[in-house]
Amino acid sequence: MRHAIIVVGSRKQFAEPVPDVVLRDNETLRMSTWFANRHQQESAQLLDDVGSLIVRALLVPILAYQFYLLVHNTKLWGGKRPLVFVRGRSLSSRLAAYAGSWGGGDVVKADSTDAAPLGPTRFVINADGKLELCDGETNA
Image (cartoon, rainbow, N blue to C red; front, side, top):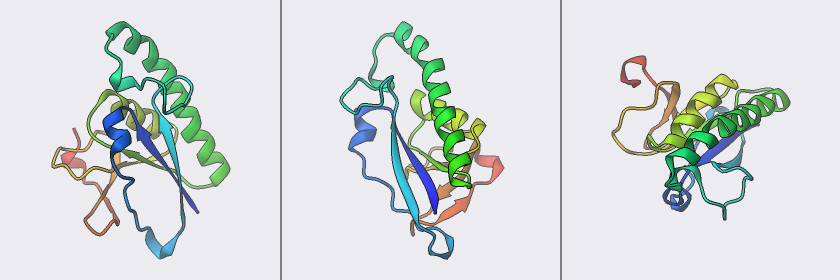
């Protein structure tokens, strides 16, 4: 079984559908959601929806460490590198991509836009829902 963590950093991302992913060898996928706020409640204000730059600056290191621990512990308990699904290029997506990569996760570009994937992105989802390795040239 492979674990997948879906990053939700704004109300817009919360409204988007969960990506449909097919893994190799019909491996099962356990999905969980990480909300980019202090107490992991979907009703609380999410990082990308916060208007104050000071509050954002205070939240970023806390959230980065929380997400790093989540990914690292998931890897330890599950035995495999978890998939970290990020959508867009927002602050919460960047935070999750870098903290997830440092925690030992595989970052997946989970949106269908033509924007270049974030730097630590390892996989992209193709039209069939299968994971494809991301080439190093398109990373930004």
